[in-house]
Amino acid sequence: MPKGYWVSVYRTISDPEKLAAYNKLARLAVEPAGGRTLVRGGRVVAYDAGIAERTVLVEFDSFEQAVAARESAAYQEALVALSDGVERDFRIVEGID
Image 1 (spheres, one colour):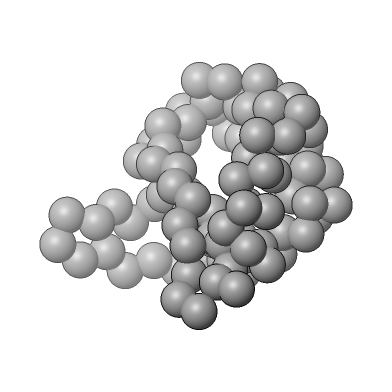
Image 2 (image 1 turned 90 degrees about the vertical axis):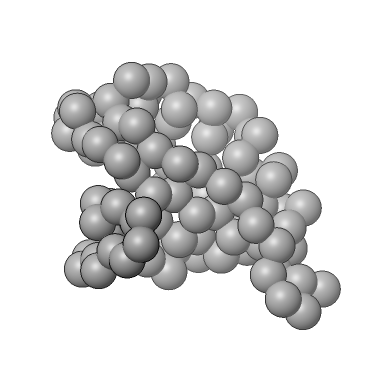
């Protein structure tokens, strides 16, 4: 079964305090749902139209598990804390089996 991945690329971070609050709550939602954070920030080299800002990659055992974690009440609480603190591109993608 192919794994599922959350891919977040942050365009701007306008409120670091909201991001910090989100990070705490998101972790409490992601880890119990089986998510494993593979990339959080770190060094970035962007090519083409890429953005050299914060990137986050979270792996789940399946695409369905990744979608369910995003829709969970715990993650919705994290999104409320984040609100307008960032502008980001968030995707859930299916890996290659």
